[in-house]
Length: 449
Ligand code: NDP
Ligand code: 2IT
Image (cartoon, rainbow, N blue to C red; front, side, top):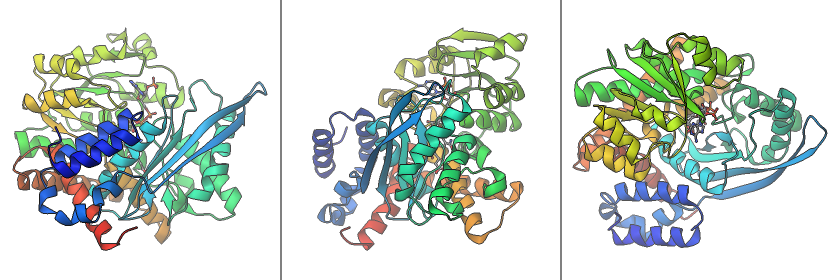
């Protein structure tokens, strides 16, 4: 509950202004509940309307994206870019292509990104964008035409010193490649730092593909070691999703000694008690772009079940939700608790409902919020921009080592802030407070802008 008068007043005004943005309101409420532990120590925030400015994007862009499908029919989608906060660096954050995309979703993601990027310690502000376009079932040529049309509007709003998009749900190397190509053609400049997640032959960084999932496991390993005196070794793990984040979270967790017993897509989940064969998953998802159900057809001893929710009823020690927002509710958490699960580490952005978080914390499970534990992706995007600026590329090992260092630092920043707030080990509180203090300081220093 928000009890602080100032935060309550700002929250009420956001709710009044944007009553139709439930995901955005959910993200704001969670952050405000954490900030009430520090807001009284900073009377200058209220005087300078820091919180009011923090919840209002610097700029919101929506645009028409017309394109022609393979049957010659004209399709029209809606594009978005929310440039939320540039206090600590140019706007930075991914693009999501999914039919569920709307302004509320993009604003919640952009808002989370401000704090996440701050936690990385790299100079990146917060932004997010995307479209309600659904790449599923589209041909390569259709995806290319869509990406080109999308960039034909977006290009005027972005640049290495302004705003640098990247991937998110439905946007991977293929889409980034098409968008970069169109940007380069329009502006007639090879500006590597304009978008990250590029292919390795044109300025992409080694380890960016793996970074979010790997980073999640590096963070989780720190939390397990410092807060529970244990590790992934011998643990049964459920990783929801089967996309970029899920695949590499599953790979690193397996390398660290865990056994991934289940993964899913939005239709259903696979259960493989011997440990999911990740080569097979990557082949199905990256090469064939097929459904996860194919796995059970091809791997003896595994099962496929319709409906993605059932995944949380399986017995596990650690759950890593890596699919989408609000994918885990309080009932799902109850199943995990009943089955003896000890930790929930978020790979997706805001995958737990507020009631789910309450249940996780109330029952003493280890918990890390996505804005901390999935920050390895954007951090490595930042490293890609550094390499583009110095016109060099670092080895996989170099990038991976930097990523490990960044994730350890993020864990420490979250933990230290949780101690300072009097709730040692509450990493959600720690992430929100540590991320915000830096942004607020930069906003204060830059005047009323
Ligand atoms: P992908 O598009 O690669 O994969 C998304 C996966 O999640 C797919 O398996 C998809 O299944 C599944 N999924 C999507 N929506 C739902 C849903 N409502 N319920 C169940 N499953 C769903 O995306 P990413 O792996 O890149 O992103 C996953 C999450 O991680 C998102 O929350 C994203 O914001 C976050 N994230 C991504 C980063 C990155 O670098 N890519 C960085 C930090 C966070 P289906 O095929 O059926 O749609
Ligand atoms: O949610 C995220 O942090 C991302 N989708 C990655 C953003 C980025 O700029 O690499």
